[in-house]
Length: 60
Image (tube, rainbow, N blue to C red; front, side, top):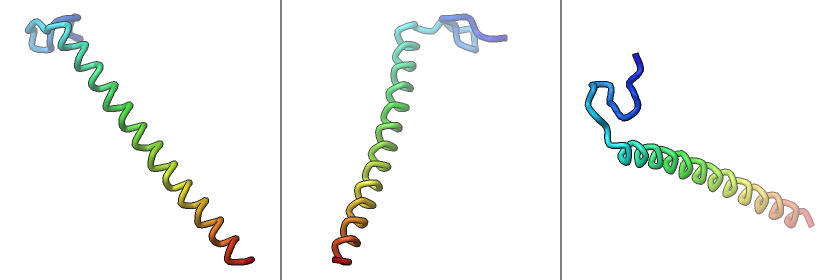
């Protein structure tokens, strides 16, 4: 049985503002995780590009 809105699984009332803040916090955590992933992928791509250019320059 799923808990009703505003009531915890134990039957205690839940402050709606707290529930909204928890939802916002979980969204922000996911957003930061995606930002970190984009940063890592971009950094790896830039290093690969620099290595490719350096390799091409040494062949000249």
